[in-house]
Image 1 (spheres, rainbow, N blue to C red):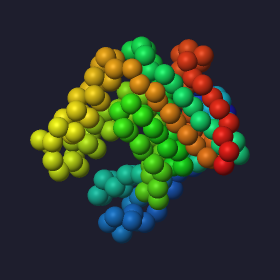
Image 2 (image 1 turned 30 degrees about the vertical axis):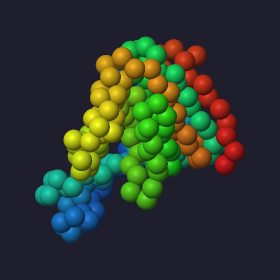
Image 3 (image 1 turned 30 degrees about the horizontal axis):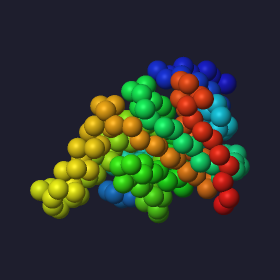
Image 4 (image 1 turned 60 degrees about the vertical axis):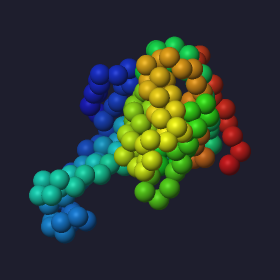
Length: 187
């Protein structure tokens, strides 16, 4: 085993490392470098992290798969302090995110990508999607929604962040664990 300390408060223990070459689904050449790591993540257990990168066409992917069974879970954070924006969000492919006060709903689907970011990072991703895909940027609804997201990022707007995963493979890690309400939910 090899201990690896990251820049965050999450300690990861690499138990296994595999790397191999496969056919790239983008350029169809056998140049896709796939790397697999097994990590032990506090509160989540063992996970398999797979990454792939093709040096020829720059195609990339990543995936996180829990190697343990978990119960369906809902995590809720009342974001009322700037510090809350730094809570770590671990979202699996099966998790949904809701921020009712901002009208934000991120649902899982066949193309859903797992990721690890912060609550602030989720707000920035949402802002990027709104700015990229909204056709009527002059509408009052669009302007109000984008303004509210920016206010939330600056810590000027309180909101509720809800992460729900029917497979229990997601979570929120906060410096102050008492700020996160964890509930088991019916699947």
